[in-house]
Image 1: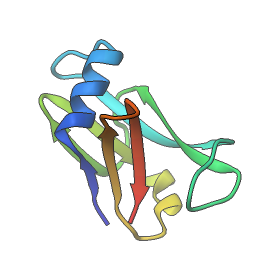
Image 2: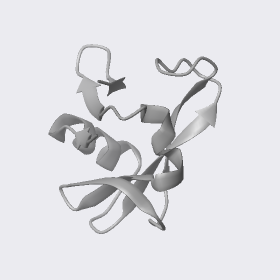
Image 3: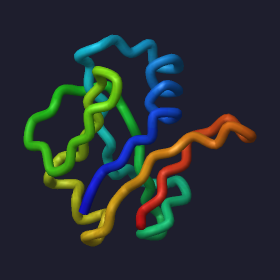
Amino acid sequence: MNLVVEKSAARWYKQEMGLTEGESIRIFVRLGGCGSVHPGLSLGVTKDEPRSVGLREDVDGITYFIEEDNLWYLENKSLRISFDEKDEEIIMTVE
């Protein structure tokens, strides 16, 4: 089980969220949306400080993490976060 944040996605988050080096992004389970793993649930992102990190990836000075209590969503799989240049959108893939 891994968290992979591609450089293009990290650049997009940095620009769109006005992130500066040393800040952290929490990836969390939320109600609604169109998640591929559990119907009625999806993943959200927010600026936050890590508390009990389950998975972590540092890219260009920004920490991306999922707390231990949200790891169940991945069902022991990995999460890849990429950026689709054509549609200019973030893609979260559980693989």
